Image (tube, rainbow, N blue to C red; front, side, top):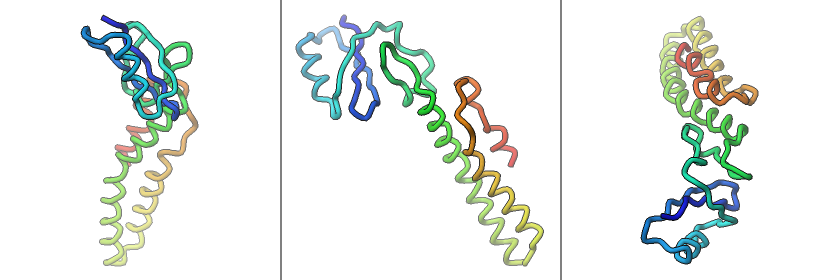
Amino acid sequence: MLNPVVVQKQDKSICIIYPTNECTNELLLRDIKQIIGYLNHYEITKDQILKDRYFREAWEYTDKLNINISKANDIHRQRLRILRQPLLAKLDIEYMRADEIKDEGQKSVIMEKKQRLRDITNFKDSPDLEVLKTYKLNELNNI
C-alpha cells in the first residue's frame, strides 16, 4: 500500500489522502492534482499524522504536520461564538420581558451578562493547545 499524502492547497489548508491498494502512483498523482486549489503534495508515513484531531482545521505542513497556533486560537474563538449564541438569544428574551415591566435593575444585570458573553472571545492567543481546548468554557457556562 502507498503511504498517505499531504496535499497543500493555495489557501494554506491541507488534506490527507489515503491511497488504496489498487491505486498506482500515476493515478494518485493525477487525482491529487485535480484537487481544487492544489499547490503541492508530500508523502508521509502514518505515524507522522497527528493523533489529536481537535484542531484539525489548524493543521499545516512545513517539514512535518503541525498545528498553526494562531489558527487554533481562531477556531476556539469561533467555537465559543457558536456556544454563546443561544445564551445571548435567551438573554435577549429576558431583557425584553424586563423592559416590558420596566425593571431597570434586571435590565442592567442582563446587559452586564450579555457584555461578559461578548467579551468571552477577547483573549490573547494561547500557545498551550491543551489549555486552549477548555479555555473560557467554564466562564461561558457560569454566565
